[in-house]
Amino acid sequence: MTIPDNKSLKYTKNPCGWYKGMDKLETDKSKMYLISIERQDKNKLLLRLKTKNIECLASVEAIDAIGTQDLDLIENELKNNFIGHSYKEILNYDFGPKAGRL
Image (tube, rainbow, N blue to C red; front, top):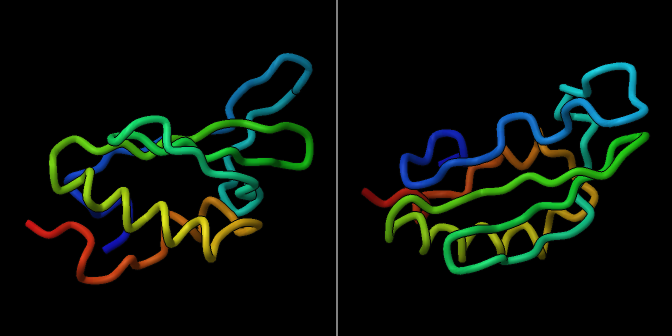
């Protein structure tokens, strides 16, 4: 199951918007690369992303107990395999049958 398909999670849809000094809105998720992950609390992951010009934050948040368990799986997978990968790749990745157990 992907992050957008998981009914137990909500996520940042466009993490890199307008920033002071920028003349355009960055919306291409394939140009936003993961540089670090931080578990803010049991229900929230912060993803630090970098584009050509800026750094920005995205979050993945649990909305129920299943989502909290899914964040554990997602956090481990991202830390081990996704540093340097695009936000688009992260959102499209299938975290498997263990994610989104309803």
